[in-house]
Amino acid sequence: MNTFGKYLEIAYAIIGVFFIGEGIFSWIGNDREKAYISIGFGVLAIFMFFFKRNFRKKRS
Image (tube, rainbow, N blue to C red; front, side, top):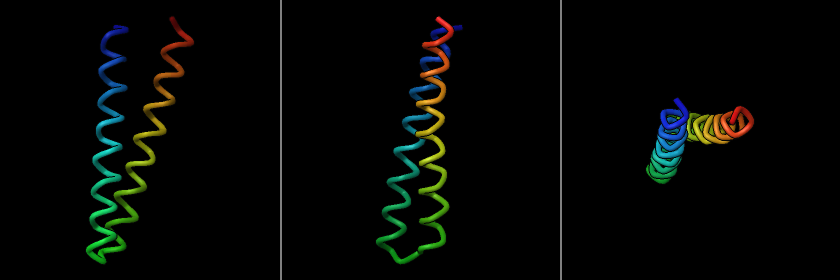
């Protein structure tokens, strides 16, 4: 189960980087509403990455 948690952390980090990148490109393309949503999801995913990592390290 610990291995699955590591893969889940990596998935959150990749999703976070993807959404932040999409938000930046949407911002450049002047679609500000989509950019705010994408960056918000990206920040949430990065937060989940650190939260899951911290929680997993405390348990082991």
